[in-house]
Amino acid sequence: MIALKLAFKNLIGAGLRTWLNAGILSFSFVVIIFYNGMINGWNDQARRDTKEWEIGGGQLWHPEFDPIDVYTYQDAHASLSAKVQALIEDQEVTPILLTQASAYPQGRMIGVLLKGIDPDQTILKLPTEKLKAEGDEIPVIIGRRMAESLKVNEGETMLIRWRDKNGTFDALEVKIVNVFKCDVPTVDSRQIWLPLEKLQIMTGMENQATFMVTKRGFDEAAIDNWVFRDHDFLLHDMDMLIQSKKGGASVLWGMLLIIALLAIFDTQVLSIFRRQKEIGTYIALGMTRWQVVWIFTIEGSAYSVFAAILAAIYGTPLFYYMANNGFSMPSGADDMGIAVSAVIYPVYSIGLIVSTVVLLVLAATFVSFLPSRKIAKLKPTEALKGKIQ
Amino acid sequence: MKNKKYIPSLFIVLMLVVQAFAQPTAKAILDKVDKNMSADNMISESSMTVHGKRNSRTMTSKTYKVGDKQSFTEYLSPAREQGTKMLKLEDKLWIYAPSTDRTIQISGHMLRQSVMGSDMSYEDMMDDRKLTDIYDAVVIAEEMIDERNTYKVEMIANVVDVTYYKRVVWVDSERFVPLKEELFAKSGQLLKQTTLKEVKKIDGRWFPTSMVYKDMMKQGKGTEFNIISVKFNQDIPKYIFTKAALKQ
Image 1 (cartoon, one colour):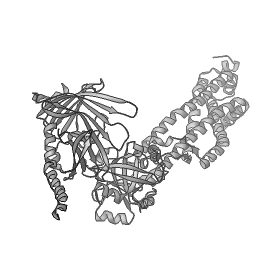
Image 2 (image 1 turned 30 degrees about the vertical axis):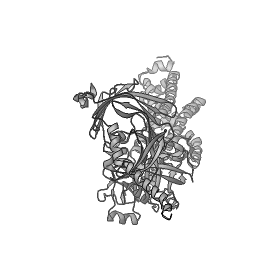
Image 3 (image 1 turned 60 degrees about the vertical axis):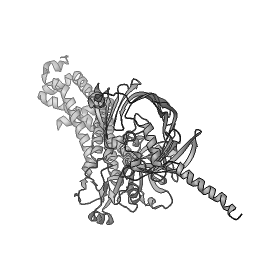
Image 4 (image 1 turned 45 degrees about the vertical axis):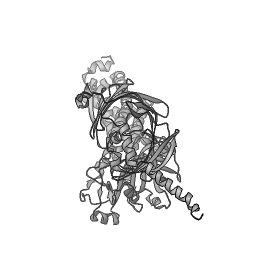
């Protein structure tokens, strides 16, 4: 207890030096919590959006379907059995049929993926009800990215060319009935959504699908030959990316932390050098060398306590503001192939705050202890005289 | 006097009958085209110019061909493509790239990729079935193309596994070489157009030495093929049509 009292008295007495060190360390506190909060917020948003727009409660894949290998699309389709049809009617699953095609907006050729989906489905957030539009042309919906890449607008028509199941070319005009805004690029980039039944007829694959999206809470089991892919499987790439982002971020805040800890280390070295008479007096008054080491170590780690208090004073309103107003992402951030919304709202968990505090206190204690060990080797008589040893 | 007014009508009917008998059938026309265009074997040197949006690339190659089933092509220029070889045996196609020193078989959906960035796909090269076997052909008109009289032959697929549901070909009525061909989708949309020019008599047969192959749905000038030299009925060593020849 006496060590704590002495340590805090000494720190308060040191004045500006103490607050400079605590200030730098508090900045590290805020940066670590803010950065990790941002990544957590991004992760939460990306997972939520991907579930709502793309994967629902998981997907049932044709055994040959591999979304990364476009060459599998031609053969990865099968008929929907009566059992599956019953699930579709109950809105438990919604079938999707894929086929490769070429779009020709204004005479340019762009490789696209045609995706047939039931206009009445309610599992995904896609505005598929717009596909019920009637007219001579086939109604299609595309995402904002796709519209930008094709340089087309809602209400315009364009030619698309595809092959049927036998490989025979066919081509028709389609009408863009809706351009939807979505943060999930995997349902947007280079994709054209059209009514499932139309695509089945166009390709000669009546009553067939490539995969099915299940409703959330769907009983995770394979149906017929369809292989069930759960969230862990479907979000694996995203998890890996988040992990790598966290790793990259840790280098940034790690460097900031090292600078702050170096400041504490230097302060401790200087303290021990300048306060030798004080050290000698403590030992002369009956303290053991290690008790004195302890006082100095506590002094060093107390910087982290002050830093935590400082961080709480100016960080809390900042975090509160950011959690409510979010952080605007630069334009184009969502073109990197993963769900990124225009505004990310950071998520600060108790675990994140506690772990950051523990990390900083332990790190500050360790760097304070390192120079303090020298005290154990001081001769008390020499120290009392203030002689440099 | 009464019968005199029927004379012009009879004359027209007679002319139509004569015309119908004078015009060869579509099958006969296509057979004659085959005789001109196909050979037991052929060695040709040609250039292919791919017209892009900003620039054009020209590649030259030498092709050895036996019938419609065997062909071997070696790219001679530019330096980047030099040494690239393609071997087609029946329905199989291999490509050798000197940069990787590897031979890969182009199969399945890879056949739908473009050949060296041109408007032509590997599949377009591979389809060696006789047109008369997979299409029902009829002569639908006679038209003038480049001041040459042509038979306009329309072909509709009679099998399901064809790339183009409908083809229309304009065949020179004297020389029996195609001067133009249009390929259509099932919906009737025009997809590709080939125009053939500079028909020359080589070794006793008429042969077009310039061809432009164009994807009609996209902008651009298409892909241009020019025959630099062609020799028919040559002795081509059998080892040319082996996979081992690709690496030589």
